[in-house]
Structure formats: C-alpha cells, structure tokens
Image (cartoon, rainbow over all chains, first blue to last red):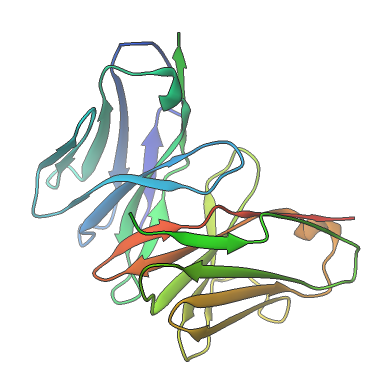
Length: 113
Length: 114
C-alpha cells in the first residue's frame, strides 16, 4: 500500500517568515495530493490540493509543489501569521475507486509573533 | 466550500452503553464517506469506508461488531460504538467525498467513556 512520510514533525517560524513542509510518497500511481490544516479539537480542513498533471498550485499565501519523478510534494506558506499555527497533514490518494487517502504523521507549525 | 457536519461534537457515556455519531454532507451528495479515529498528537487512522446502500469496508484490525456503520442516504452516515469501554475513548472524524475526489472532513466527535 501507499506510505507517506512527512517532515518535519514540528516547525517554528517567526511571524512573516515562510514555512515549508515536505512529504514523500511511495506509490507512483498516486495522483491526488491534498493538504489539511487541523486546529486543536477540530476536524482537518482542506486548504489546498494538487493533482498529478500539475507541478504547482498557488492560493494566496499557500502553494503546493509536486515532483512526480522524485515522488515528493511540498506545502509552502509565505508571510506566516499566528493564525497559521496548527497541525498540517499531507495525504496521497491510495486505492482505485474508493478514493482512500493515506496521511502523513503531521507537522505542528508554530508561528511566533 | 463544502460543509460536512458531524454530531455530537462531544459525548460522555458510561461503560457498556452505545453511542451514535452522525456525519452529514450538507451541500453535496456523498456516495462514499470515511470514518477515522485520531489519538492525541497522532495522525488520522482510517477505520472504515462507508458506501451508500451497501456494507461498509473495514480496515484490518477494526472490529465490525463494535463499530457499526450505516450509510442509509447520500448525505448521512452514522457510526455506532457499541458496548463502549474506556479504551474506545478517542476523537472520531468523518469525511465525505465530493465528486471526483475532494475530501471534506467533519469537525470531529470527542468520545469519553467512563
């Protein structure tokens, strides 16, 4: 099955700096890669996703890049703000039809004011 | 964006009782919903895939008779934790698939079994 590795597990940045979280996946057939933000005590919120036919996607301060050859994808947050502090999960599509996702172990991002 | 509603958000029950958690897709039809369990400071663990009108598919190690899943309509899936015990205390989260693959999550349900 699919295996998703996520790094780092914790990340602290100063407000205004950029944050980068990286994930690698094992199944070359995976074709959908979403990123989720989870605040304490809440469910994950989809913040951006990318499909395998695209190399980069941007939405305001958030961007995701995908390198299919190397099987890794990254989340980039620019001009970080304290409200960006949360746990971020990457995921990769695994399993034809049912659209199951395999999640990374998460990155706790802390933005220091 | 799409909204998935989960209820209740918190529930406390006595050991041996059953608890039902509902997951609703409010603005789209979801033929497939997923149920996860999340332990503190850990990632989401897929428990089962819920398919409208058919039996759920459980992940290895998940007890079917303890975690009953019903997906009776295109907008509602329910998870019933039967004969709950303290070790079942956890954060349960559902997600619903919209269209070609986007997954949206509910707000989660914190179950505490005394």
